[in-house]
Image 1: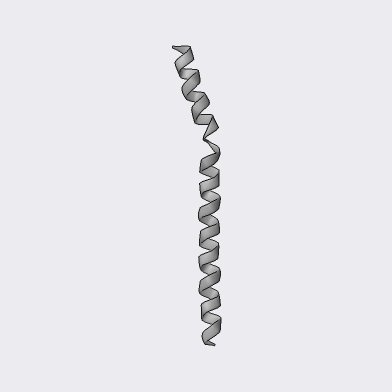
Image 2: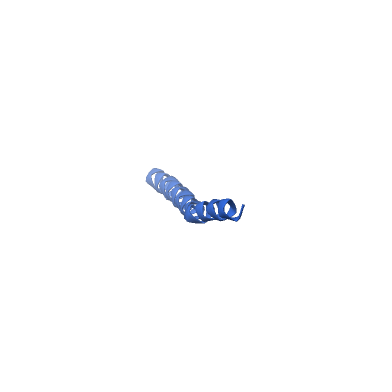
Amino acid sequence: MRRRASRIEATGNRERWLISYADFITLLLCFLVVMYSISSINEVL
């Protein structure tokens, strides 16, 4: 039983960085959308 638990834990820890990476990409996308919307407003003025 211990071997199974350690394998599952090891797999979860290896892919843990994906959560941080996905959060970073989401924030970057939001930032770019906001910057694009601001630049569109400035063209009209």
